[in-house]
Every structure is written in structure tokens, then in C-alpha cells.
Image 1 (spheres, protein in one colour):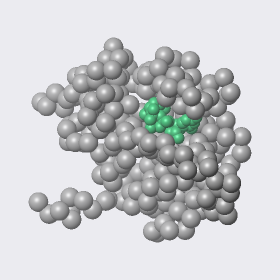
Image 2 (image 1 turned 90 degrees about the vertical axis):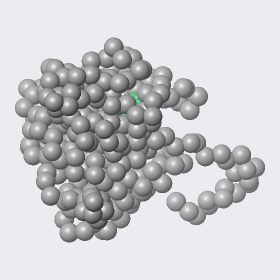
Image 3 (image 1 turned 90 degrees about the horizontal axis):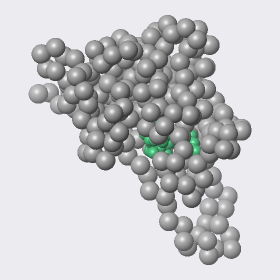
Image 4 (image 1 turned 180 degrees about the vertical axis):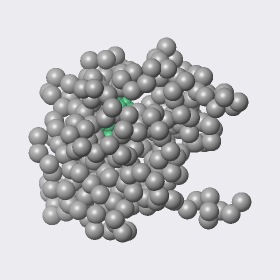
Length: 269
Ligand code: UGA
Ligand code: MN
């Protein structure tokens, strides 16, 4: 096997609209920078970054402008949006991470932007700011005709959560998920992609809801796009290859910082 051919990213195929909700915290810049480097190498990508905030921050604006400067050819574009999660739905630092849905208003804002843009060609992917993406994920999701699904590493209490594929028919027949397996589509946000044409074709558009039970965001959205497992296009070697990991970043320990009279980052972004 020629390693170079196997690894070289293809920039051909439709634009990937990569939707990333993000919120201000100490690791935010590092997270976004990491993704930006992936996206610069991922072929034709339009990054829609939606800040969970009342205002667009200078930090995110600068990071996006800097990424755009470093693009190769015309392969990278971006849109910077913001919308605040209403107070009653906001996760506070003392809440367990599963208590309230995250990124719902932000993803809806991005969908709204896409639907009113008049665009109909492209692939929509919900890429959180803390996951890890293989460049080959982009080659795979560019094949999506309606809705595709593929494995996600390190999620749902498993090493990998994945669609189960009937080899002969090449169809998804179920999932290996153990957390809330009663869900119709028991997968993580990072485990599916949608063709924009399919999204545009839905009368009234599609949306996420803050009111569905925990873990049901994905199923809620997918129910607006497809009606049965038969319609799912399995990707990533028929669901046998991990191209995205649900990594989560540890909160930095700042016990020494609290003892300082002048913060260590004074004058530094
Ligand atoms: C899991 C799923 O992978 C997420 O797609 C899903 O949104 C989330 O659960 C959920 O419970 O709603 P998890 O790693 O626990 O993800 O969530 P985060 O990565 O903390 O948040 C998901 C996205 O929303 C991230 O891009 C994050 O930056 C953003 N976010 C988070 C906000 O915009 N505002 C917040 O207050 C928190
Ligand atoms: Mn996450």
C-alpha cells in the first residue's frame, strides 16, 4: 500500500460546511487553533463558527482571519456568528456536563444561516470544538447523498460507537451503542453528515430542540431528514474505521494562578 496515496487529502468534491459551536473558556483558543489546522488541510471547507455569546469576540474574529490568511488557494472560507444560550439553559461550571444540552442554539443559528443563504450544494457536518478529526473524515463525508453515518471513537462509554453494517446489502442494520440504545439513532453528534440538498428540501427547514431528553438531539434532527435505517449511507470502510474521536479537554489547573496578585497572562491574549 502506498502510504502517501492512502494519507493524501483530496480536495475534490463538495464544500464541507463545518458547524462549530464554541464558548469562552481558558482552553477555547487552543481548541479552535487545533481544529483550524485540520480544516486548512481538509480540502474545500467552509467553517461556520457560532459563539455562545451576546457579542462576537475579538479572539475568535482574529483566529478566523488568521486562518483565512493561511489558506491554500480558495479552499478555506468561514462565517462568524453568535447567539447566546438563554440563561435558564446555560451550563454553569458546577453543573455536571450532561445536565443541559450544549450547542443547540448555536447549531440552529448555523442551520438558519445556511438555509437562508440560498446554497444547496455541500455537506453539513456538526464538528464540536474539542473533538479530533482525521483528514480522511472529510473525504468520506463528501460522498454523502442524503445522510451518512460512521464510527466515533471514545464516546458513549465505549472505545467506539458505530453503526452495524450488513456486509452484503451495505446497509445499516443497527448500532453497537450501550448508552440509551433505545434511541432510534443512538449515535453522537460527530457520527453523521448530511447533504445540504437534503436539508434544503425539507419544508420549513430542520432544527435542534433544547427540550428533548438528554441524548436525543441527534435522533430529533435525523427524524426530520430520514425515516428509516435503510436510508443511511454507512461510511468509513462500512463502519469499521474511526475517523473522529469524541475527545474532551481537561480543565486546566490554575491553583497557582489564584495566588498571584497580577495574573501571569497580563498583556497576553
Ligand atoms: C456531547 C456531544 O458530543 C455534543 O455534540 C452535545 O452537544 C453535548 O454532548 C450535549 O450534551 O449537548 P460534550 O463533549 O459533552 O458533547 O459537550 P461539549 O463539547 O462540552 O459541548 C458541545 C459543543 O457545544 C462544543 O463545541 C462546545 O464548545 C459548545 N458549547 C458548550 C457551547 O457553545 N456553549 C456551552 O455552554 C457549552
Ligand atoms: Mn465535546
